[in-house]
Image (cartoon, rainbow, N blue to C red; front, side, top):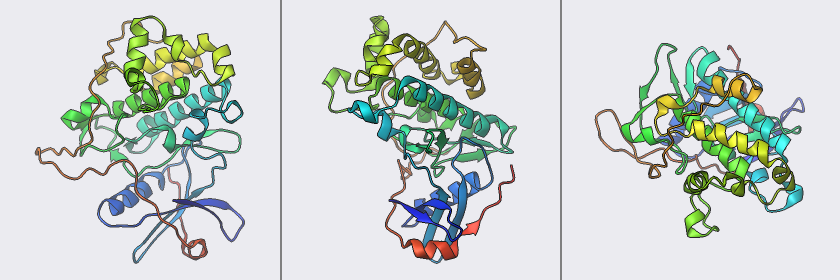
Length: 315
């Protein structure tokens, strides 16, 4: 669980309490190490943290409109976001990832980009959150060998080799964009069996040249702007190519969204069998995967106010 709290100076914050050992400790340290040393308008700001005895608390700026998934998978017209809002959110995510990949002191792979990890403030500005699975590497490195981690449905095909690059985040971004455009989760068991897996549905409609059929049917504004939405699907397709070397960098995606670069025409896109999360190490031994998200449990907010340590943003 995540709680809404107030610091002594009146600042509203969101407080996460992590319970457990092993993977929880790794997640906590990864989050503090990553987000505690960077600052960008499209990344959720870490206000402070507590690591005392068994307590593991993370204190973030409060994002009043919650996570993006609550706004794009709604079936009620008044609770969904229109095209301009979704387009702005897509740009915000792209800029946040560009910063992580190219502008930080250390290159940062988020490794778990999905609607649940995109938070919205009172003006629906989007910020990337949840850095518990992130990986920091030196600027001169281009790839890393690591244990498979992430969320089923969002895992890029190259996870099967355990050698990953920042293009894993590009793939995750493509999946999240597709979900935003279609208003459908990557795996939606409420759909007919042939439409349950969004990437398979996307590929089938692309072959039939009927991509506009899968634009969010529950949102009138998305239907009005179907032509523009269709163009954005081209961006998603570019990011979802099975060969990671053919995916664009996030900085190129930003330029496409700004209208300075065109989407590549000769795309090599193939639907692959969904990657099942399992741990892969450099030596080939399997271990327990970190998994989707760290469980959070109730916490006394009064204790947080006296134990928060400020974190400096040095980048």
